[in-house]
Length: 471
Image 1 (spheres, rainbow, N blue to C red):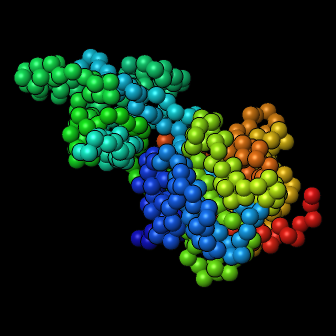
Image 2: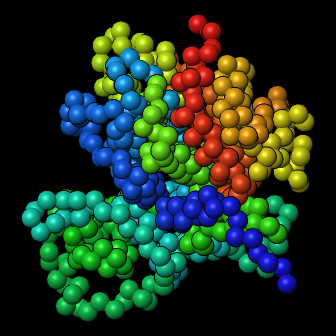
Image 3: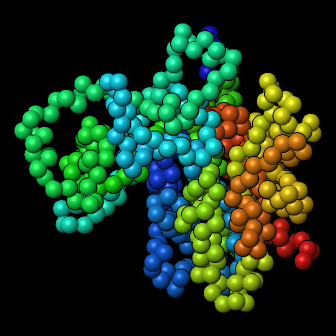
């Protein structure tokens, strides 16, 4: 009998993280729990916290529940110090419930959804789907709050058409994302349980502008209310995402793979949180001097990073200005800073090897990828690449190179946006297959590879930078 390997320890911790994080809201919540456990203190952007910073202090703040910055203050810190930043994104392509979602057709209750990002949408067909996100609730004191919800039970499905009704489906499969990509959530007959008295009462009640009761199926609102232990009429709005209820898992003969949704880019985000949280509790940390160590988890990268919580927002510039408020100290800080933009990369595919340039074909579990593009779709240059290689060397790791073929378009990530601040930037990642599918595949050892790079960066960049003679 084959004895199953339990897999790398870091990969198992990542499974717990991604299984608990069906949305960016949940991912930020999970990150804050980990940071607070490591002794990070929460601050608010609206507060005047700069005067309270302490040498060796650990802090974080969130924005709109869907982006996060965490930073550590070194010993002997002063204004003008550089920032060592690991930047990732936590959003992934998915389906989102429309503001008016109530639909029905030929006996089925359906839910109107909108596509978000560049998903491989056919991978969402015939999957066991559910809902997660945040809900705006009225409280007993007349105020409002936003609470997270995750319905564990599969309640939605987008069924495919039987092959008997489309004999060409295996030769050429296409579908309309508006009319043929609508989930079913139940049968109309299930909503016929309301009594005449209840229907008359609902008709007679005047609906307020903030009421959404008519926009969605009552059964869905009741399910959300039950999950949150409130009455349906207390729900005033929500942002709900569809997600696959199948849990992430290790796979392969020796658990060398991770089969999971949202690894682009929750894997990088998890590794960033782990790296800075572990530094915060290590014996080495109190003696560290040099840069402020920072992680930035951004939202909305999959749709262009243009939002209050995206990489083109004020999150990084705000931190720079608050830590170094004068023009001189700000310029000094930027010149001493360095940013590692980490997003997942494309592993060579055994069935499509021709999709890679022959000398730039990264493999899973073979080390960190440095992403380069002459057109600056990635922000890497030779200095940044050299720095990453030296940092990986410190932990005994390996590095791979990736550059896209000349006859293919190159993707991008948060790096080029953030390089506009003037901070030196390099783009890296871990190799994976099926990027943007509802079920992606990555290497289980690459979780630790990413953590090692980020830890080495936080521990050793300031000293390495002093050895560089580049203006």
